[in-house]
Image (cartoon, rainbow, N blue to C red; front, side):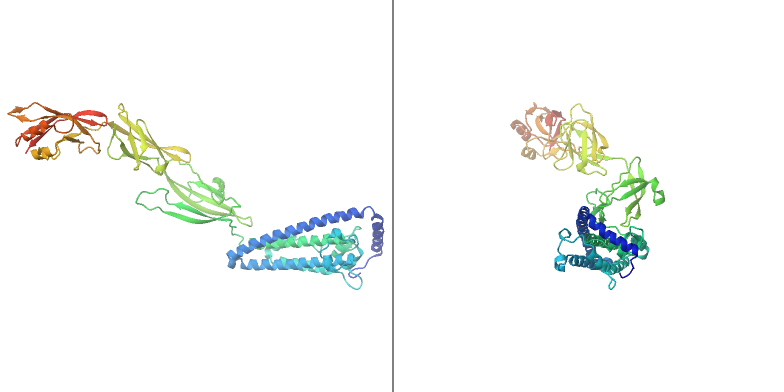
Length: 535
C-alpha cells in the first residue's frame, strides 16, 4: 500500500482479523453495529444542536456590528471568514461520507446523501471503506488528503488568534493529527492507519461525524474569542436605564428643582460589588479589606450609612466589576453628606397663641420631608388638614391652658419624630362696642340715626377675626343736668324710644352705652361700656 509496507506479522494479524470477524459475525457484530448506530445518532443530534448555538452567537455578533460598525467591523469580517472556512470543511466531510457510503453500498451519491446509517445494508463492510480511505499500491486513499485538510483548517483557525493567546487555544482545539498512534501489538501507526485501516463503514461514518463536531467546536471557540475581543476591557450591556440624581429632593416655593439624569448602561448578568470606607477621601485596592462590602442588583447598589452624630460626613468607595475576560476592574469615587438634628417648624398663622372655641390655622413643616409625609399630633383638642392648605387646631377644652403639637414623618425606618412646640391657650379678648360712623368718639345725630344699631369688633392688637354679635345693651342720655331712665334693647338695634332720645340730644351731649352683651365662640359675655359725643 502507498505510504507504508506491511510486515509479515501485520499481514498475519490482518488474516486473523478476517477469520475472527467471520467467526464472531453471528453473535458479536450485531451488538457492535447497534452500538455504532446509537453513537452515530447521538453524534448527529449533538452536531446539529452545536451548529444552532453557533448561529445564535453570529446573530449577537451581527447586532453588535449594527450598533457600532467602526468598532466591530474587523472582528465581524474575521468571524465571517471563520464561518466560511468552517462551512467548506463541513461540506468536504459530508462529501467524503456520501462517497464512502455510495461506494460501499453500490448506490448513486444522490441516494447515499439522504440515506441514514441504520438503513445501510453493508455497514459492517471494511474492505471497500479501507480501500477508499487508505488506497492501494498505485493511488493513495482519501484519508491522506483529509489529514492535510484538517491540518490546514487548524492552522487557518489559529491565525485569527493573537500570538500570545495561541498556545492556550492550540492545546484545546482538538483535531490532533500528530499523536503517538499504536496498534493492538503496540506497533507504530500513522494517523491514516489508526483511523481508517480495516474499520467498518459504520465506524467510519461515526468518525467523520466526530470530525464535524470538532470542526464546529473550533469555530465556536474562535467566534467567542473574536466576540470578546471587540474590547476585552469593555462590559457587555444588557439594559439601559435612566438614573435621576437630584440636588435635593425637596425645594421651596419660588426655587428651581435641579437634577442630573444619567443614561446608565448596565449588565444584568452580573451584580456589581461596592466597597465603602467611611471618613475617607480615597479608597485604594490595597485597603479594600478595611471597607464595608455592598452587593448590587441590576446595576444599582443601595447604600445606607448611619447618621449617629451631627456634622459633615464623608466616605470613599470602589466599584468592582468583572470584564468579559474575567479580569476585575475597580472604579473609585467619593462623596459627602451633612447630618442635622431632626427639626420641625410649627407656627400659628394669625396669632401667637391658640384660642378656645375657634378654628386656629397653623403652618407645619419639617426639614427634608414633604407635606404628605407629615403626621402631626396634638395633646388636647383636634388637629386636621385645612382645605385651603396647612392645618387647623380646634375643639380645645376649657380646662386646657397649654397644648403641644408633636410632628412625626414617614421614614424608611418607620415613623420618625421631627420636633414639637408648646402653645398657650387663651380665650378671645373682649370685643369693643362701637356705633357705626363714629370718629374719635364723636358722631352727628343724623348719622347715628341712619345706622341705628350697635356693633362690636376685636381690638386691632388681636391678629384674629371672629364675628362677635351684640345681643343686648342699655343706653343712657343726659337730661336737665342728670340722666333719664336707662333704655334697654334686647338686640343690637336701637329701640324707637332710643331713636327719640337721640333726636332730642344737643351738641356736646354724651350718650352712654353700658351693659353691652355679646355672643362669642364660648357663649355670651359682657363687655365694657362706651360713650359717644353728639357733634
